[in-house]
Length: 112
Picture 1: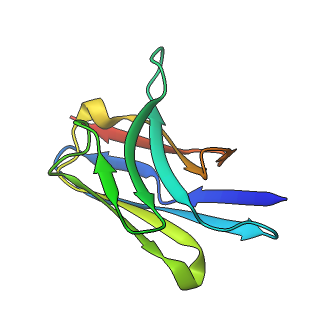
Picture 2: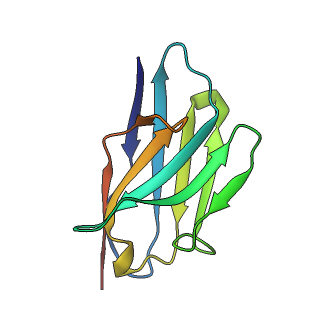
Picture 3: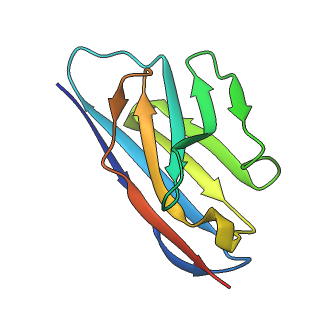
């Protein structure tokens, strides 16, 4: 059984920063890819960033130039550093492992 636990969300003013963490635990899994998604109220869940086993990184337009995805293999943890936050970044942020396992989400609220 694989478990993902996100943390690091919270309330921040526009222009501020947050760092989200997603820690994977369990047995029988290998890291192929980790993604960050977000879902704003009444909107579809959207991809924010992806990092794969080889270290390749993809950012969507929502994240480019402001967010940075990184990983710590020793800790089975992936991070999302979010800078210059905007009110439109307000959403529940989820991580997904290997295109299959989801975390429970962490709320990010950016006030104007």
